[in-house]
Image (cartoon, rainbow, N blue to C red; front, side, top):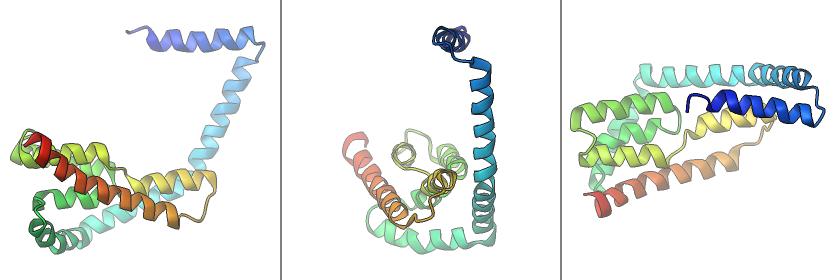
Length: 169
């Protein structure tokens, strides 16, 4: 298992040499393109990270959580999952931190722990993905993709609760 990466790299180099490709030049060209991509998406990432930080520190995130929790509870959703459901489309790291907190408070095998586990696997960091991939490709019109991604995330949250309630509870 320890040799899988070196063997894979060696296989690519040997394949390139057999095909008479200038392997090191191709590597440098790819590295240059990678750096250009980083240069292109860096402002978007900085803006997204700043927005997430501002949402969390301003109290807007907590306000949204308090606003939505009674509705979620009325619909039979545990209110403890609301912060994860709200943060997951914006920040994978932030939602993972909330998930770990839920595991510490309730346990990973609890009803709430199972829901957030399924939700973490079923949802996407939609805003991050759209921001990074679309900005690197130079796409400006994101409206339909963003709406579709958020609807998919909402559907994943609903079905996470239903799945755990039906099959794992």
